[in-house]
Amino acid sequence: MVESFHEFVVHRSPALCRTAYLLTGDHQLAEDLVQTALARTYRHWRRVRDGNPEAYVRRVMYHQQISWWRRRRPIERLEPTPTERADADHSEATTLRLTLNAALLQLSPRQRAVIVLRYYEDLTEAQVAEVLGCSIGAVKRHGHDGLRRLRAVAPELVRDTAERSTR
Image (cartoon, rainbow, N blue to C red; front, top):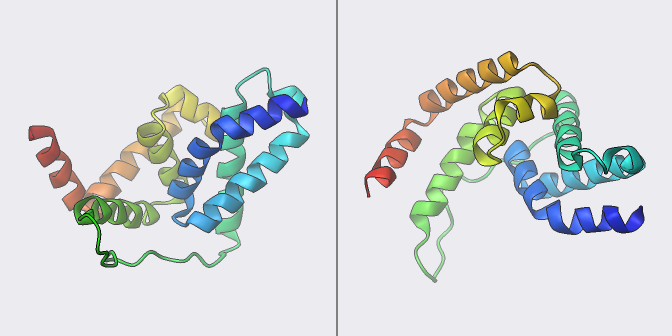
């Protein structure tokens, strides 16, 4: 049992950390979120390991993030402009990431979770519904509302995407 859980953690932690970062907007909080979710998953590993353990961990992460959010835990915000570095110019990619992160933080937790799971983790609507424990219709509604909100708060993301697709 311990070996299979260890193997799962080693192989899936990077992807889980990326998802957690997109949910929290902070690297340290993301690491805490993954660690908390994995600790809770370990208690139920015998039951979870034969199904879809990654979906279970994502669900735990989502619910834990909502719990933290409800407690109004202070969240550190990223600076709106990247700091200067002497090496290669990554300003365009950095600006895009910062803009996306700032825009995601303006969504409700459920909208953010749907957007992250649907478009970043590339899950189907049914898989997102399973992870979040809601209906497919709710996933569609939150996804629609979240995308509409993203377009409103960060229209430059739409322009950047259109420019990249024509290149």
